[in-house]
Image 1 (tube, one colour):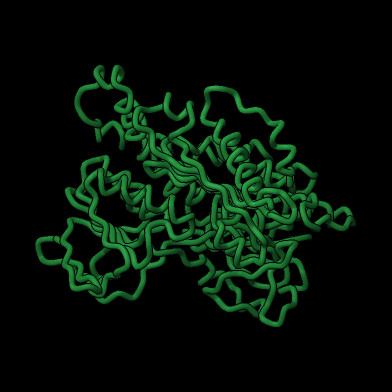
Image 2: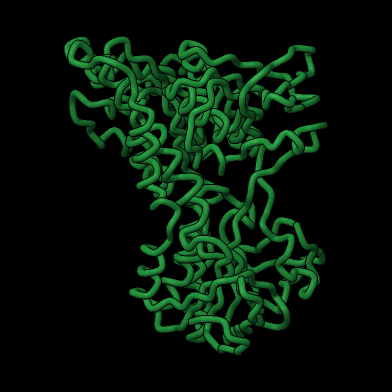
Length: 490
């Protein structure tokens, strides 16, 4: 489908061709409806070309080398350092060399239409798409318009920062060279992962953060990652911010920090948060403010400032743009649920959006999952101990040394890690879990199932972990919890 000053009528119009939009469109098409995606950049979106896939490709070789060097016999077989050029070439492959032909082929095979250009809301269920050549296509939706435009890096108003031409997550993910030195402003997931990657690739990394590293995870996990970065040679300035940034005539970037320290680097990466891609979307046509995050109800329908559904209920938002859980996999989860709900409504059925219902997105509130691919990795699901307490849940917090588990000791000499489970003391179920250590990401899904299924701890005793694997941490946590309970009884 192409724009030629035409009007096309379809069942569902999706603005944004990233993984969230693709999932919405795929589900409605599978249900027998028609769908068109509007995309102004590359089909596949941020995750495919500037986030999930290329960044993890930057990190993987270094993680494999670290794993080998933790085993004496294997380490003896390894000489030399990382081949940086090979790392970047492999990253390029995972980003499809920034060519979306493969993703477009997938859309064609799935029966999903594509209109390239910038989409704007211009009337009830109407989206006007302006192509690169200036031609316009008006898409009229019978049932729904879905906004899945995602977010972009926020550049804060630090004096001189914008003029210094900083990298954002996009430039870091797509870098064609490794700078000798790199200053990173921001200690969240992007800042921490890129500090890990570029330190391993040979940059002298200096990370500046007004908070502790990874403020969204348990403090013990943050400390493990910070210690590892320092051991790898990165300099961390935590609890301070950048107050002035300038790039001199020779290209060197100079940062002045709030504690008076000075930092110089060849490049500066800003990673302090995200802002929604809603600034030029035609939101004002439905009574919303351009540039704002989109608030949604339990059905992912967009809400206006007075608490009513914008556009009389035909306008929806999924993924980063609604700020519920800004992670690709949760955006895709929303996309699947929303696509199925739109199809149900088209059949005259009421969607099931009660807790854990077929069309609900309950996991966004109770079981958000995340793996931070630093060295060591951090894997978490559900609530931290602090968040559970803030929610008024009576909790028990149980910690255990992951390095003391036989599977971890076999995995790497000198293995260091820790695990925590947060238990709802009244209901006897898990509400949160965090683990930090090398290669812990694959431990996460078992506990995700336990939390979403609300499996009682008494039943988890019967989930016997294979020996000797790192999954034995579950037995140790349950034993520690049981021991603590016995000691507290009169």
